[in-house]
Length: 212
Image 1 (cartoon, rainbow, N blue to C red):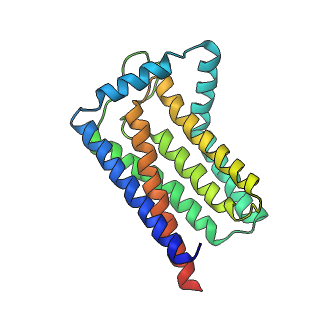
Image 2: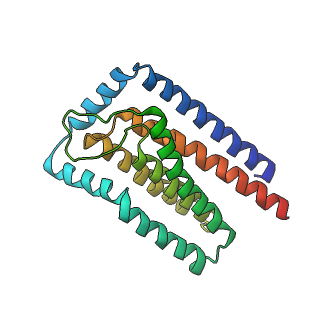
């Protein structure tokens, strides 16, 4: 795929995700998404068991705070020391930090209260969009993008996508299972972060093109 096609695809994906987020945000603001949220919550929380609760608590733990910081530092070390990426470090930091700042800004805009029924763990702050979901999508999404070209086999690339997607989805689902986010918070987080990641990649590819 040539660079022009890559730029077009990144811009198109960013636009689609932004439109999707806008649609979810309108439904949240108008309180017209309650039925969707309630159906998904009932489905996920209906699977509750002691073992599954422990698993969900683990994924929620590694999806925020200190674990994300440690994972981020480890990836930065690998990119810089092992793979000798220099310019890629800028993209990685830009995506991860930018996503966190965007999440805080969006939470302040929408002021959505967290779910109050059947909360297994405590969580503070506003609910929409999910910070864990945005952080997971940005962190594992940009990591997959940067590692892609270093994997030469189709099976290796499939494994990279499967592992990244599994981490993102499981962290998002854990927030619903534990009762601290609505499904629309998680979906909105994925879409907002997807738009941010794609437009960041677009700028990065444009930068690379101008250096040639």
